[in-house]
Amino acid sequence: MQVLPATEDDKAEWLPLWRAYLDFYKQALDDEITDLTFARALESGENLNLLVVKSEGRIIGFATYVLHRSSWARDWYCYLEDLFVAEDQRGRGVARALIAAVAEAGKAKGAERLYWVTDEANKTAQALYEKLATKTDFIQFRRDL
Image (cartoon, rainbow, N blue to C red; front, top):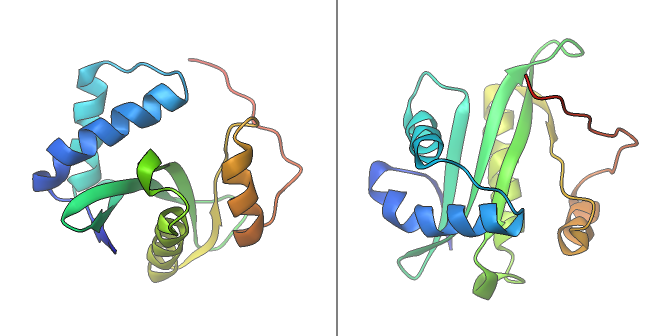
């Protein structure tokens, strides 16, 4: 199993996983947004990054993350925005490997903190996350603009 930055050649294999991820969260995005997301993740000037996990020659999971400045810190924070593992590959340490790789990428940039959110109903993911990080008391609010 290898965790690697995505390349243009990975798009065809990443796309079904991305769609499965969106389906899992009952979300629908225009193809234009999906294409833009992938393109941005490959651009060196963007803060959006995409890692893929390859095993036996195929992509079995991915994570996107964003490095950003914080008003609460001297340096960077690292936000794990998306994490998905193919259903038939779960329980093999793929998500743990992705989180570790995102943490290392954040450290390399000088980030002080890695953080993420998950759906309240996603108890399986939470069981892993509670082993890797500290659950906070913050609640996310959202407003469309």
